[in-house]
Length: 318
Image (cartoon, rainbow, N blue to C red; front, top):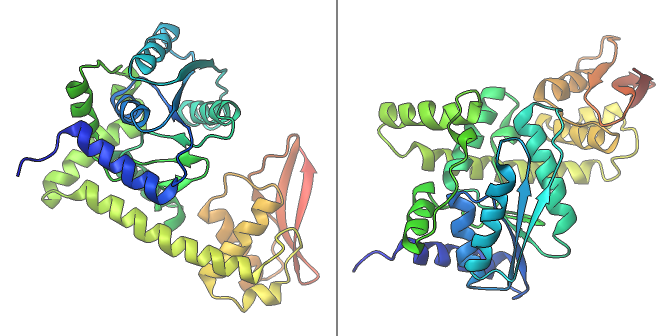
């Protein structure tokens, strides 16, 4: 029996995802960059439900407005009921990739209305995300990759290889945009894609991309279980936790509870090193000072401290 074509395979993947995660046949939105992944996803999505394409123009490259307009026209030609270009201003916090991602997600969230947003991330993107997390050394959470459904964000192609979306565009006779940034070795993800993953595939005999994606799934399932136990142990994360209560918890659950408490208090960009340092305020207390925590509090620094048997957060002007 012949294998189905690329478009048919993508349609089957999206249909299976929709039946499980989005059973109500409501309209949805696709985040369209113009690249092969999101363009192929837009094509199959528009054939299944009323689809609006949202094209974020980051303004980071010459001619970006024309690229966005071309993607808008392609979306309409592919059957989208609407297609909108959203210009954004990209900041600098976290570096160029993180800043662009922050601006993009904020724009999509503001424009989506009540519709879920389909994202064109593939299995290859998942593998790259796992490797990035491994390199950061931030623990299993950073290697757990992306969820297929994290409302309103939906990733129906996480089980699909990137080569399939390229083939689908060829079948459809549409020309995707080739982002120069996707071939620029200044970006870590590009070097992982072009150098590290091919080397691993060669050294380990193939199947590495799929294995990394399976690793992400296993780590995410474990992390979600630990988070559920932490929620039970610390039901109100806005209350300063008692160190004796925390000390009685298994280490992974205790650190998940600490993370939850830090996030509720304004902590952001938390690393495994920071969480473990706060954990030592509970398990290895010798009178040490507070732990500096990244935060989203403007003009203030955030410190986690131990006082009178409780963990407390102290805010200090910058």
